[in-house]
Image 1: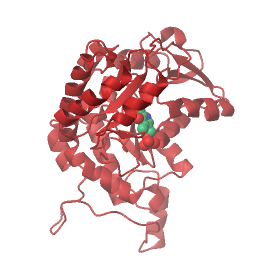
Image 2: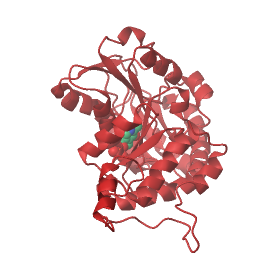
Image 3: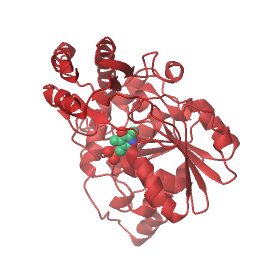
Length: 387
Ligand SMILES: *Cc1c(COP(=O)(O)O)cnc(C)c1O
C-alpha cells in the first residue's frame, strides 16, 4: 500500500497531471467520448488494455482527468485503485454488486444510509442475494453464514453516528473469506483511512465533503489489491461514469479538503458541546463526544471529526419540531451535507436488527462555515419553540 507522508502535501500535489512546461496549475476539464488513434494497431492495443486504469480508449472508460482523480483518491486512502462513478449511491450499489452474486449472503449494518438499505431490500434481494442486518456495535462472528460474501457498514452510521470497530469487523469478515465494504463518506480520507485498518473496499459520496460546495454529484469505490480488478470490471460493465465537470470539481475540492475538514470539526464540536448543555436536548450524537456509542473506536481510528452530528430532543410534538426547524434562520432545510452551508434535518432511523429507543426527535445538523456564534444565537432563539 502506498504511504502518504503528509496528507497536506498529497492534497496539494496529487492529481495535477504531467510535468510539462506551460502547464496550467489545474488540469482542464476532460470532455470527450471518442478518442482517436494514429493506426489501427494502436487502436487495437488500447482496446485490449481498456480495463487497465490509465488506458485512453473511449470516454466511458476514463479520461486524463478522471484517471488523475482516481489515482489521487486511491493514494490518499492507501488503496490499489479507485473507480469514480456518477454518485455516492452508485459507488455503494456497484461495490455490493461486485461483491455478491445470487445465492450469496450479505451482512449489512442496521444503521446504514437508508438508500443503501433500500438497494439491498429492493434490488439485491430480488436478484437472489440473502440480506440480513446486524447491530453495528456487536461482534459480527455469530452473524456470518457459510455463504456470506461481504459485510457492508458505515463509520459512523448515517443519522445515528455509532462508530463501529472497523479493524474487528474487517478481520472477522476476512477470517470468514468475506469482503468488508465500508462507507467512509463522513470522515473522508483526511480523518480515517479504513483500508489501512483492514477493510477491503471503501466507498465515498464525493458529493459531500470532497466536492464540498453542494454543486457536484460523484462517488468513489476505493479498493485494495485483491478487489480492484473485479470492482473495476463490474463498474465498467454497468457503463456508469462520473461527469467531466464533477471530476474537475472533486480535484479542486481536494486542494482545500483538509482545511475545510478542520474548520468543520472545530465549528461542529463547538455547536455540539453547546447543544449538549441546552434543556431541550437530551443527547448529542457526535463521535468526538464520550456519550456517542463507539467514541473509544473514534479516538483510536480517526484523526478528526466531521461537522455532521445529531441531537435528540426531549419528547415533544411534531408541531413543535416543525416550529423549531422552520424557526431557524441560518440553517437550510434539505438532504445531503458536507457543503459550506449549515443544514438541519429531522431523521427517522430505520431499524430491523436493533431498536431505536429514543422518545424524542432525532435532528441532524451539518455545520458550515458561517460564524459559529451566529449559529449558536440562531439555535438559542429557536430552541424554546420545542418547549
Ligand atoms: C449521501 C450519502 C451517500 C450517497 O451519495 P450521493 O452522492 O448523494 O449519491 C452514500 N453514503 C452516505 C453515508 C451518504 O451520506
